[in-house]
Length: 83
Image (tube, rainbow, N blue to C red; front, side):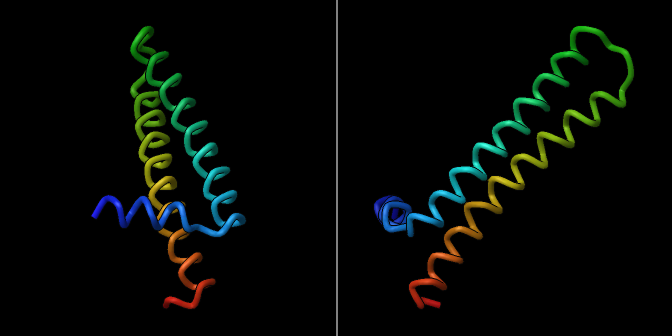
């Protein structure tokens, strides 16, 4: 099963793979920003608003990362006319 998933990622179109790679970088940057906000909240408890912003950004980065994976695989299979 894992070989099939890895084979699917290796067989991606170059443009789709490039878009997914830039999407992962974007998600990682949002994740780093949320981590910085949460560390700032942990070091100086100013307001719970910072906590909610940090957690929301972290969730957003995870959701975007999953969306880039799923949409990249779907777009690649549509390009190859598998769907």
